[in-house]
Image 1 (cartoon, rainbow, N blue to C red):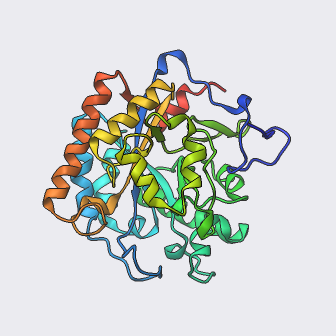
Image 2 (image 1 turned 90 degrees about the vertical axis):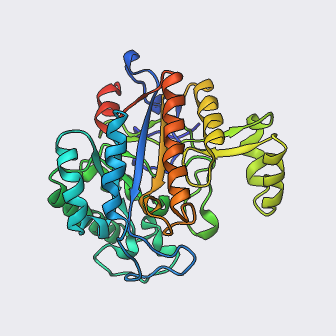
Length: 339
């Protein structure tokens, strides 16, 4: 790894060095967190626009919150502007957040977040591609809206479409954000103008240790006999995705993100076991909130799929418990990080 976060301006995309890796207190052990991209519904197959979206799934947040509470898990809701403006979301989550049974963070979808001073296109859908002033203005407006609606100042951020840029770290530090969780290690979005996270580490690191800003990347593991070569093999096959599928079917190499969206429970368990074998201190799970309502994402088409979604979590929670992996939240992660 390379980079000097002491002498250089903090930047999320800069590769950390060994000294930047976060050390956690011994009693923290290995933990997992659940992050929910709490966002409006829209047709993922159509061009983005500012108005063609819905919020029909918002009432379903109540069931998921109750479900997590039954397992003693504190979900982290990363909320974007349309959801922050929906009074039903605050009504459902505000008491749980105040009691520490849930946490709230920021998720910036630029195309639906004011001020609307940019063209709506793929390039501008990555907030880090906007001018620093516009990215800052959108972030501040969203953060303030969340704080007013939910009664607490958010401490964690994820860029919509994982779209961080050169100014993002400074903006987060200015606004007292403690954790960024935008980096999706093992994924490369540069073909559409987004960031390349292919070689970023899977363990948390300090973006700005002096300023107290940590990166907590989403967890994606390579599994199979070829997994140690995954970072070289998988990107090389981006033009021939059928070969990626063939390697997975042959049990030679799979890329497994920790999400119920497009990943089976058995695959997720394989990913968890590899993560534990590699000694990751935190496993970061994620999904999009519209998947809580059938028909709103490509992953949950009907009630049967929704039942499978919840069963996925039950199976994953059971396996994590058997492996001795306890749940955590932003408060826990911050408290355990050694400065």
